[in-house]
Length: 357
Length: 247
Image 1 (cartoon, rainbow over the protein chains, first blue to last red):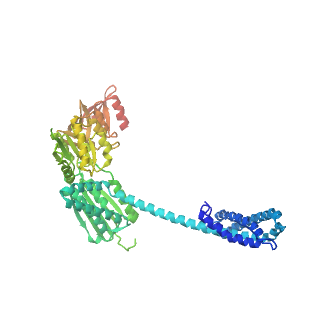
Image 2: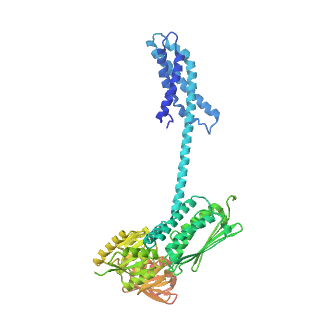
Image 3: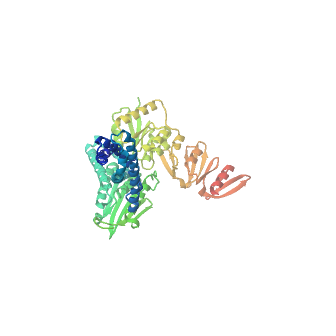
C-alpha cells in the first residue's frame, strides 16, 4: 500500500505542506495589471493537481530503490520520472490557462503562462524530487517498523518454544500424583502437606528459572535433582533410596539445564515404580581432567513387569541432541542394561564459566 | 443391609490413606483389603470376592487393566489414576467410574453411588472378551497372564511353544508346563504377535520358532514336528498360512 494514501494523518500533513507551494506558485504566476484572484485561480488547482501527481513518486521510488542498485541508474530513473511528471503538469497548466483565458479581465493569460512555463517546469522537477525524497523516508520508516515487529515476533516465538519444551519436560502426571499426595496429607499430617507444597513450589520455580538459561553449573542442576527427589521420597517412602557419589570438583562444570533431573525421573518411573519393594538409584558425578562423567543406575524388574516405554526413549533423545548441540561429537551418551540393572552414562567436556569452548 | 466390601489397590501408601480417609464417613462400606501391587490385588479379589475394586492403573507387576483381565468377570471396578489417556479403555471394560487424581471426597461419593446402584441391580462388569479387546490398538502385550486360583503366572510370549484349544479353555504350553486360561483360541490369537504365531489348525496356534519340520502324513494333510518332538496337526488352510509366514 501507498505509504501516504493509506494513512489519513500522513495525507493531511502532505496536503498542508502543499499550501506554501501553492502560495509560491501564485506569486510566480501573478500578472502585473491583473488581480491576485486570477493568479490564485490558476495556481491553486494546479498545485492540488500536482500534489496528487507527486504521489506517483512512490512507484518511481519502488523501481529505483535506495539499496541494491547503482546510484547512476537510480538518479536516471528519478530524473526521467520527474521530467515526465513535470512536463505533463506544465502542459496541463497551459491547457488550464487557455481555457480560463476568455473569462479574464486582462486577456492573453495563455500566452503569459507560456512565458512562465520553463520556471513552472523546473519547479515541477524540484517538487517531484522532493516528494520522492519524502517517499524514500517514509518507506525507510515503514521498513524499520516492520523489521522491529518481526524481531519482536521472533522473540515471542522463541520464548513460546522454550516454554513448550519446559512443559514437555515436566511430566504432568508427576504434578497430579504430587497434588494427590498433598491432598492425602492435609488431614493426617498437615505439616507434611505444607512441606510437600513448599517442596513442589521450590522444584517448579527452580526448573522454570534454570530452564530459561542456556547453561547452568552442575551444582544448580544437582540441587534441582535433590528437590525433585525430596518430593518423590514423600510419594514412594521406603521404596525409594538414592546413593550419591558427587565429586565437588564437578560443581562448576556447565551443563544444559534439566539434563540430569529428567534422567532421575525416568529412573524412578521405569525402574523404581514397577518394583514391588522399590530399590536404590545410584548417581555418580565424577571428573577426569577435562572430562565430566555422569552415571545413573537403577534396578529394573527382570520378571517383566508392565512395560512402560512411553517417553523413556524420547527423554534420552532429548539429552543426546542437547549435548550434541553444545559439545558436537565430544559428547558421549551410552545406555546399557544387564540383568536387572539399567545404566545411563554421559561423558562430555567440563567447561567452566568464562572459559571458551 | 450388607456393607459393600471394597478392595483398594494402589502402590502409593499415601494414595491408599486418602481413600481410607474419604471412606471413613461411609458406614455402608467396608475396606476388606489394601494392596500395593497387581499380584496382591488379584490374590485379594479372588480370595475375598469383594463387591467393588478401587484400582490404580500404574502399579508394579501387573497394571490395573491386567488385574481386571485376570479377575474382572465378577468384579465392579472404579479406576483411580493420574493419567487421563486410559479413560476410553476404562469405558470399554465397563468400569463403574474413572477418577482422576487428585479427586474430591464428593467425586468418590458419586462414584460409590453409581457402584451401589450397579450392585443393587446385580450387574457384573465386563465379559472376559471385552477386556481383551480393550487393549489399546497396536500395542501387543509381550506376555500372557494366567490366573491359577489366587496365583498369577506370567508367561513371556517368546517362551510359548504352542497354544491348544480345550473346550472352554485355552492351554498354553511353555517351558514344559501346561497352563489353562479361560478364553477362546481366537482371543489368544488376537493377543499373540502375528509375525511369530500362526493358526495352523482349528485347535492350535504355533510359535514358528519351535517348528523343526513339516511332514506330509496323508493326502492334503500335514503334521508339524516341533523341536522337542511334539507332533501337531496342520489343516490345509493352516498349511497355507504357515507357508505364507515362513515362505
